[in-house]
Length: 116
Image (tube, rainbow, N blue to C red; front, side, top):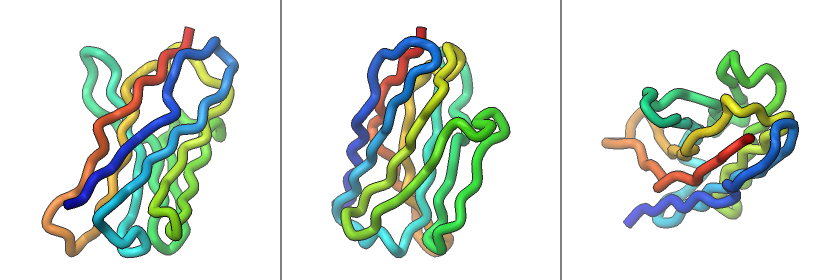
């Protein structure tokens, strides 16, 4: 049974920082690519960042150097360090583990980030 558990969300003032964590169980992390997504109220879920299992990363344009995605395969964990947060970053943040040959991606339950 695969389970992803996010943590690290909270309320911060604009300009502040948060570090999100996503711990996976029931899978071998190095076999998966990992990503973070977010969904604000009334909006579609959108891509934030991806860390592939070959260690390459990519970010949405709106990140603009403010966020960093990292992964620690030995702990089956992916992180999202978020700096210089803006009110428009307010959303529920979700992690995803996925692979090309996998029947389905795995999603966490989300962690709320609120920036005021």
